[in-house]
Length: 554
Image 1 (cartoon, rainbow, N blue to C red):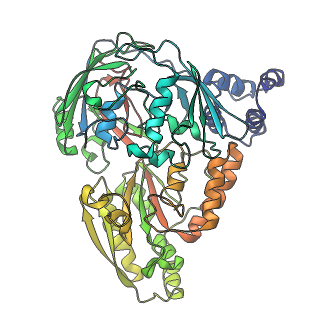
Image 2: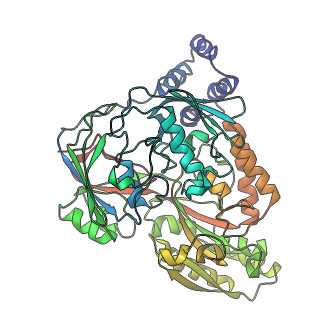
Image 3: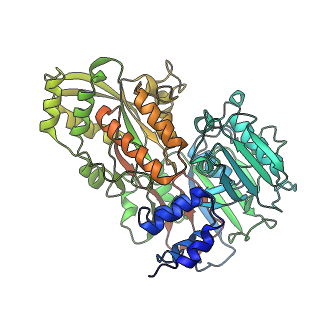
């Protein structure tokens, strides 16, 4: 297609230097169409405008989002894990709890399956020149289920609760060092400014569905959310019974298109196998998240549909850098070279994953530097590194991990592979509560183990992965990795507004982590949702959310 420079010039006149630089990258071929749309949405450019720019650049418009609408009036039945604790937007941290909360409460914007940010309670957003202040314009006429209109004070109060250390919010893992209590400001009834602790080029993801605690609830919220389930969403709570299930009905006063289903029902299960039996037996229509190995019986069964989302979710293998036999980076690299990643992807994950290259930069991220060579299994080189480190005779060591998804099988594969370089690996596989403990150093098998595997859920940007488990002061730095060069690069990446600047920093980070190998990223697994045949319009996210407003049954 031919570029229309007249239209491009007209569009450029009203754009910031940062936006024009991104447009130039698209026109020049330095930025792909996919990455342009994704990064443009982050900067607050509307999807229609992004489509107009790609069309003018000769690359075609946005794909049509219109879908055949199913019949209204269905009851959609979902199998879900049991919420681990009382459902509270401030503290909720488990998949079962956040799934229920998300049925009634909404976010400023939504991180879609393609990582493109889409407006929800906010209509638009934009950064200042250096990304230290982000301004969000709110949608007008949005009503809470309790009747009041959602306004700026509700947004400020909701985010302030999460940023306040006194509330022990689960979202502090996102907001610490990024957004402090009191830094969310009301400009007028429909405008909010976020004044950040430091420039942050990916901030809109921090207040999107990517940060699952960041739902907007009334400013006067005092706790005990299970009594009200007050939100702005397309469904309202009908009944909630702890440890048993929940049901919801259509919100007839919803600000957007009314939900297709009349009702949704959620049944809580303690294990995935009873969920699979319930789906096969017709008692439920959807399994929200299905592990690969446990769900093999459904993967190739034509009686069921599998929704598969590429994600950044992964299982980190941390190697303690400050003490013991793993202190030498050569030993850590040797262990990484033992892994047969192709077998992990094809065998353990049944083709439902992407290869990891020992950094948080997954293939789904536009900023990932794909020119960095993929680490492959090389036992001969691993043995040479062990000899050079004075560990040629091998050693005994314990790998401590959690009994969750495919992790125990992953640990057994690692145990077998490292035997080839003389490492005798003892496995200590614990239930999740024993593994995580109090999740603070000195009181956690996770953070105190010399070697361990930990599940990390999907994020639309790598900021949390770069900071919490890898920065010197990271709250989840189980590897005890301290590297000033890494800290500076991670800080630079997080501050960058420009995609090409992010990619330049990402390449340096990827090279440094391959050299140091404090954490092994073997694969990034796909997020799988199973549905019965004839169920359509179900939209999961890799954050364990499930959007059902467009769901129907044949």
